[in-house]
Length: 86
Image 1 (cartoon, helix red, strand yellow):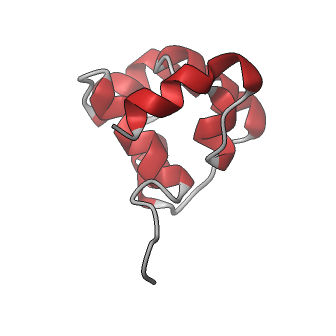
Image 2 (image 1 turned 90 degrees about the horizontal axis):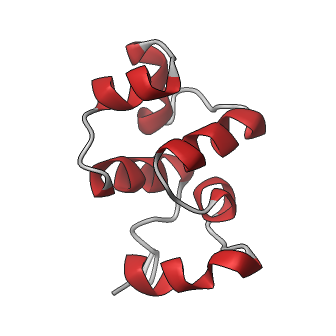
């Protein structure tokens, strides 16, 4: 579909946020205290974390939780939008 954003799905945003922090999937999984395959399945779109876990991920990867979960920014973090879409 023309005009689709490259970060239009949770798994793409998760991968972007992890790479932005220069973390491997294994390192991200360890930081979040989840199994490596659980994390990998999130990035592949095979599984989805709970919203509570998305909040933990957002803190770990230093990214806005609203953007990570839904692709929109919370009022408090609009400046991150400019950095991501530069």
